[in-house]
Length: 331
Image 1 (cartoon, rainbow, N blue to C red):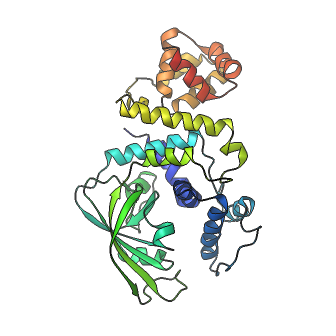
Image 2 (cartoon, one colour; image 1 turned 180 degrees about the vertical axis):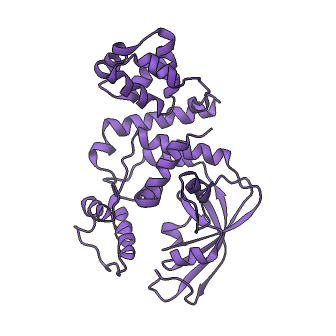
Image 3 (cartoon, rainbow, N blue to C red; image 1 turned 45 degrees about the vertical axis):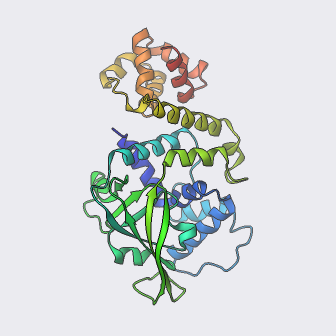
């Protein structure tokens, strides 16, 4: 089963601040393009026209962060690290598990089909009027094939205690598409469309392998897209290695995330043996891909309490991902 906590974390970030960032990475755009796109979003959020030309201040991550915080967002973009990939993998596994039972027509409102169509992880709706409200010049009618992976945002929101879903929204994986009809239409119910007309497209889509697409993007990152500490640092390298291993394991039918290793709260308490550092290490392992298998190694070898803390703190520099890999190698 996909990790629902990771799915909720991904969707929370996607909904509020990271969707454009993630999809620009999928599409191979540099960070200035991301900033320009995000600045457009903030402009519409604040009810004002975006500028025709962007200066260096507007095309900076710091400016987008500032605007994001002013909208009570935690950050305006996510670093591509192991924690982020765990969320992305959980969403991919959900796409593998939750399939549309029949061919379905959905709608999407966006800027242009080339920049914001269906080539990333995008949200669509079964309600045309909702899509029109999100249109900034383009309205897309998409024919989804049966068995395409999808996440019902309404059901997930109800799982978080939100009683009413008003957007009939679902998330779909990156897709190739074929345009079967296009025309310029008169203005409709489109409060965000300042152009006066709407470009309409009717398309057929074919889903792509989301993780394979993201791996390709990680191997060929846009220059200066991420801050240096992420793009060329240890976190990014570890994340790239993690995704390669996951995809290779999936191809061999041996994906750690699908394992049913039995580790419960009582096991965690016994292994921690009251040591605060061990509790932190075990808690971090429990929340990550393949973490339960790593904890099972501790249990099998009788490593407890302060010994877990020393392993995590001294041997692995308090890096739970290093600790997980070390324990996997001890099996």
